[in-house]
Image (cartoon, rainbow, N blue to C red):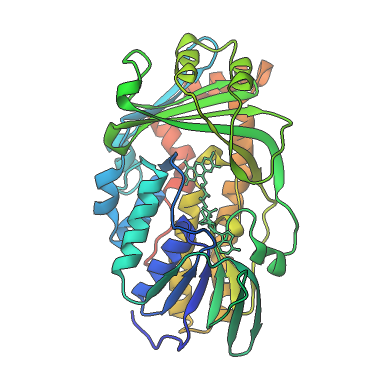
Length: 400
Ligand SMILES: Cc1cc2nc3c(=O)[nH]c(=O)nc-3n(C[C@H](O)[C@H](O)[C@H](O)COP(=O)(O)OP(=O)(O)OC[C@H]3O[C@@H](n4cnc5c(N)ncnc54)[C@H](O)[C@@H]3O)c2cc1C
């Protein structure tokens, strides 16, 4: 539904997956939008990302499924193996079985850069969106008529409202919520992507595989129609390096996975350069808006990656935010309160359940035995039912 849009643009700080999804949603309903990205270029790191059926439901609503399908990979199954013995703990069929369980929507995996590119191209093709780089937001102020974003380069930009989609280390969050630095989980992720031809057939798997062990796990899956192979190795560590995108230490990784199954050690040995992430989240909050300013994605509810939902929840945020602004006919304060009210319990559930899954993956002793016996007793239907609250997602046609 179209309505009289604000005369000034809506400002979005951050052009990651969440910020671009929000820009696309808002421009589609007639708003002028300015995306202010601090980096010199729009882009994403090369790494894999899982997309649950709840996210494909959003792609369907946004008319992006066809573009996503061109670059995604649809694994036939996902499973967990013991990292030492290789024993299969659980295996759940995906493909048509997952579609049937979740309203016809697929489960897939995608190269992060490809997802970002689909959103960036959609924004470029959509009227009403200005995309700016080298435009880091330093601070903002607001009054009854609008917001003013102060850029790091000294420039001031006026807008009707501000959406902070500036990620885990959000500066805008510090003005709105003021809860300091994120919580360091003590878990570190090393990520790398191989070309298909560089993975020997005996190490390749078409499925999403999680190799779980004490204080460690490795996740692997193909990407980009099966042309690439994604690896994410996670382990407990005291190392703390603020931010991300630093390089991992191969010796530390070899040591952590010294007892692992030969397939795992074989795969790890194929990688020369790892990118390292210190994994952080925050305690959930229920108020992340202030007048004409609000937060979205990791800025609002950063989560550990163990349910593979951070980007998906950011895209769901964008859809709900768009609907709220439409419903309140441009009254941003009311819309932002209604948006966070619709989002905070769902996103808090993902934040807290993700922590629990991290513990389960890394279990030892009796906890490990209990995990294996519960998982091994599960059939596809039970696995699907357990994830229903998350994968069924939100109905964009029935929000307000
Ligand atoms: C190891 C790992 C695995 C993951 N796996 C998955 C997965 O399988 N599935 C999934 O859905 N999610 C996954 N995630 C989570 C996902 O990556 C994030 O939740 C998602 O990227 C959040 O998007 P965002 O747009 O909110 O923030 P970001 O992607 O962090 O984007 C923020 C943007 O804001 C910009 N910015 C920052 N500060 C400013 C400023 N002051 N002014 C202007 N711009 C600014 C940044 O440059 C960046 O472009 C994973 C995360 C990790 C670490």
